[in-house]
Length: 370
Image (cartoon, rainbow, N blue to C red; front, top):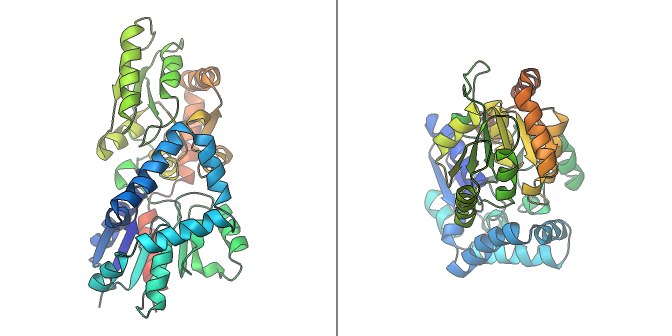
């Protein structure tokens, strides 16, 4: 009998949803009974507004405060305890989902459902809990619920996880990268844009000073088309459009895009000459899979979860970091001028990429079952 797989995620940003879909597609391709649930949609409206809306507002408007909250909740204390109680209480509808679907294994692609799953299991419902960590650093929220198996991005993540949960056995942890949609996987000889093209994205929710970055790149002496993707941040798109209209002296053409469908975004990342963005977990592995020369623009970063991702990219030689607009122009300009450096970054990206992460996760899920 085929094991039943329940995937539970949360639509906070775009990354968790994208990773969950990649795992769902892999399960379905093998004929496994699978259901993919966005747990946020099963919580009260007030909780959704606070949890999802509060997160997006914090990372857009007060990123430094978000960074402090991230680290404060990473240690035992009132902030962690309050969040744990809220997640357990407001994910109560997960009980009915588990009762209806009767999974053999539940895959958490967000930490939100973990404490509720632990309560359900302690009440007598037998299933395994697997956790797919979508950043290099395994935050304390990912450790809840006594998971049976972890899937993490890197060996650094393994070391950190085992130091935080000494009872874990090494065979309970699989290094698989982070699952991304197959559309981002490029062949090393896949054609790039004939015209130099710089894609600038500040993430799915569009935080960070994207107008400032685009303005600097549009004025650089190197010739390139600038494609600015503002995601779901409608205000950022309006600001970019208005800025473009009032500044006709830009040296480079600028195309402003809002939310871009996944297949189209994958095409942009695979074809671009240089990618400028932030090191979200999913973005990190999408860029690696696409072999995109990556300039991580540090003012775009969400403090906390994305900082270690930026270090990882720099350490493997697949990205460089830019600290301010002047540094951004220097870094991007150098890559536009240097075919050799771009090619070297592509090769390092492909070497670090794990484009078959979803396949490895499903292999690991099946192997973990009795």
